[in-house]
Length: 632
Image 1 (cartoon, rainbow, N blue to C red):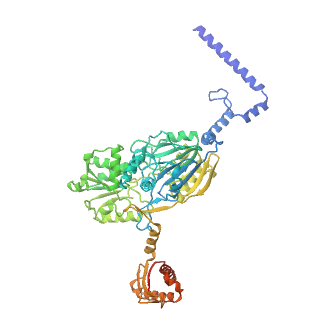
Image 2 (spheres, rainbow, N blue to C red; image 1 turned 180 degrees about the vertical axis):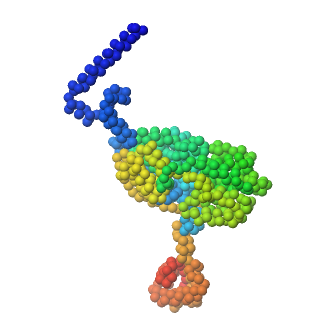
């Protein structure tokens, strides 16, 4: 013991002496050299143990560490000549229709191929799909389509694209099965061979790109964000997202992968802007469960729950509560049945099949033993809930005692339709739970604090907010500036605008043709633009039809012309209007060049212009004019 103590004392004495010597050497050095050293090299703690006795120096070191971790752009290769081009073909300046091309000189990938819905002026149009003109131009360099998730505004146009051109499609199981189901509906089952299921957290080489799917939470199961490695740097595409820490399936957003890429250095972040005006955090999907519990506990009759058919977790929560209260489950609505079947077949949700009944079996059970899960939360006229409300559904009709749950927010533009279906439900004697419960619906999109978290995790050099109307992306860009992205490095995209990016710059290159193609879902056919324009004209200003027989030699009307109007003037004034057209036609024939009578098509076109000018001057209307002239 004695020897050990002596050894320890001697060792401590030696360490003190060596420390004094090193301290003396440091003070003997010239101050100029020390200053030069500080200017030309990073200050590093001399101990090499992460600590030092010079507090000022330690502060400077930590300040630099903080700056470096917030802006790891020095990790980007500033010497490279590589560049990448981004071209959105849908999803900017609108909600829905999401589609984007990311390309190098040699290859390209398409991110999502979505559809959107028409407005009230697009008569007879069921859905809108992006214009594929640019894809036709670069089809030889397209390596694949990569899918973020299974919502219609991200996969709804796939079948229409594949009717024209086909590429490998990469994604996770549920969105791919939904796409496969669309192929089946369009009698294109053979195109299922292009579908490729991926593993998350595993980068896949696709052309010049390396793509990794990262788990994200949203209002549909199995949503993903994309990490796309390009020769110019890494691009993070969030897809639609929220950051739900307690999701129904127990799989929260994979924040670690975003942080991983953020530490490596990210060239560009493309991020969902839909909820950019909402402060705070979007509530977890689980908050809907207790609301369902409360409503079911008080319900004496049938419960009918309607939500978006793709929100499987919402449907699953309703079914769980329904089973708890010993109710049989009846699923009605083609899209709802299909999505629920797919999710159960793939194993995303698990329920005993003997608890489900068909619509024609509902009347065999007492009202308090039935839960009906259905479509129609947006008031669609052809939906199951709407047909039940107006007593046109084959098996189910709304009656007093029914408890209706509308677990969805009206999409902008659908407010009148939702209000209409609620009115019908109330007239039928049902009780409707909608806006009177704050937690009956939660959004699937990130609010401001979640957007900030994404920006802080990824720490991009360049930032382009996507997915939303112009006001949404502008607000999101302001959030980006607050989170340290330089204003000059933020760009607000628009559909068809092509942007080129390298580690050194971001610039607009050109504008490509884009727009919407009108689809009639009943026929699965495109509707020509001029057809939609004609429908708008007839709906807004009416139609004037003129049939007349003309003598070429006398340049006069042989018999009294036949004039019919629809949607232009009332029956009371029809006689006066017909007389005006007769006089107009006579004057027109008196003043035309004789050779016009030999060209029937030109003759009718000129008359159309004359009649339209008269209608605009006198009636302030631009009706469709349909002249039919017979020259003899």
